[in-house]
Image 1 (cartoon, rainbow, N blue to C red):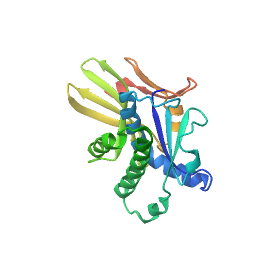
Image 2 (tube, rainbow, N blue to C red):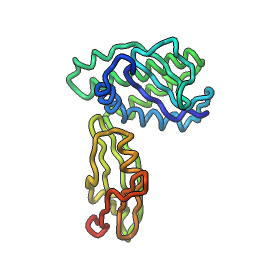
Image 3 (cartoon, helix red, strand yellow):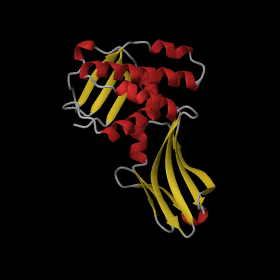
Image 4 (cartoon, one colour):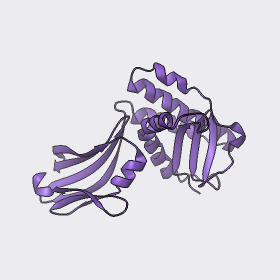
Length: 218
């Protein structure tokens, strides 16, 4: 199976739900970028497609496929350091180091070189801004081009409508905002459709969660 997902989490057995939720939400923008890199490489290491790097996890479970095609990898428990960080950049550097710790352990087991491949890509991607953007939809209408982007940061998800005239960005507005919880976002903003008159946001059960008139945007 090609690896398409990677998670970083505190150990489920000795942490509270609220702490795990906050931890995972703050790492989503990094996770999405890493998954993009992994999908491009179509890496197949066995009967799993998800990596789960667990701080303080049980090393006896390492590299044994569990649940829904997941491969657990235990990493050192150091998350108490998060309490001392004052900035988002400090927390970002910590989470990146933990992802790379997991990939280093994976490399040792499978004789791969993922950590050395991913490290410079991460540094370049996040050297200026701590965010990950994904194009949700785009359409040309008259001499304008509407591009709808999903933007994940350390503390929010925003659905942003950008209007271009040629290459020039002439308008940008936030259409939807929530916590950057991927499960909530993927449910509520499952699909974006643009017609000549409307921009529709549709959730996972095909309900329309948001409708905007193109005439009010361009």
